[in-house]
Length: 158
Image (tube, rainbow, N blue to C red):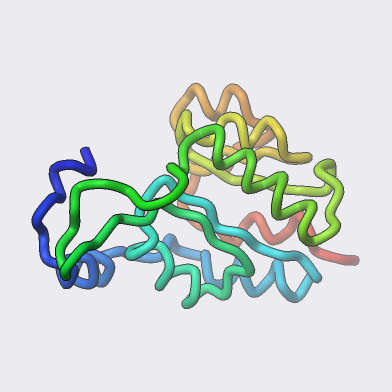
């Protein structure tokens, strides 16, 4: 599918990125996590050009997404670097936990699709968020309404 983007001007990424909307409650969730002393990573099978501005806006501590290759101001229809797929998402979770000195049993992962299953299974707590039934069935818990900040109760302190 990335091949279909071949020839698009680099500026098209900014236009597409401007159309991306933050999930309700995301900013609050990131703020709650940071107030609780947590680190927040954002790993996406999407494209850095769209995900990085959201990560910056939300205050993500780390980010991984697919990097579109650009040559002479146009997309080549290829990716640059590692493909962020199902296996990569789990690797990033483990890498970041190690980087921040967090035991895997104390990690929380959130996902909605089959490409999140390995990451959800590796996390200490895997949460399906407005997810497909296969993900709900595999996760430790599920949130079925679209407000991310409800998850902040997981690290609230008495």
